[in-house]
Length: 300
Image 1 (spheres, helix red, strand yellow):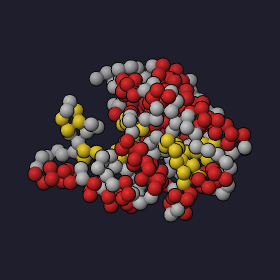
Image 2: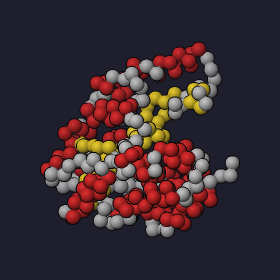
Image 3: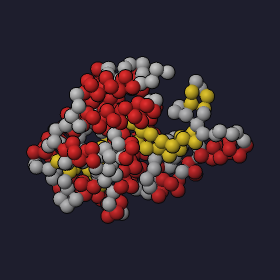
Image 4: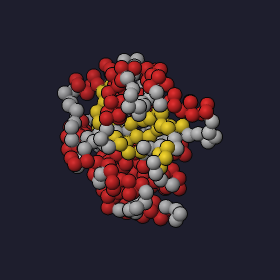
């Protein structure tokens, strides 16, 4: 469906990422007696319990060069799917509701309740804005951990210390970002790489047909660092149980939505949304941030 418009297929998604996950240092997490939260209230209770122990609950980093801020847009999108639901999310992405709509404001506020409290994030707002996203997971694996929770896509595995990557199942834990409003459940937010044919030919068609087969993905799955949307995939081909379980969650998700900022006009999704997130974490008034993003939406 993601590669189609009005019933016509224009592209084929192959490697994909699933973003709606929270990672934790398994051994230290279990040693402290922490348990996996099943609801948003339980997640916040866990956050507060960790903070009360004198350790920062979250490790977060937005810095990504010219793309700084995209990590925050993913947070807003994931939260909005859980507070407003997929239909409102779709309207937001398509600008059928304005960027300063109350549903968008609510999602930002949920994120702000976590990130704007310096007790909740390792290094506070300064670290959020200056830490490269790939490095931001590392405090979880200091000895002892400087933080215990990190929300990010499956590709963050590639940024883990080698000692962790070599022992993923023993060192790394992960759970789905919990539901906020129970009626929306736990949707999966994702992104991916799409193959598109610009010049049709029998060879191109044959190649695309091959990419739809699990055979074209199995070796990548085994080597790690990628998930696939194929319904016919053999989950046993994944090289570890963590990615195997994430692949099952992705394929079986009742609600999946593509990264909203990637679908918005570039002026917004790769522009004012990114900078607006940075402004918000820097302390700018939320209404001003959302009004500014709304004004940046192109007329056509």
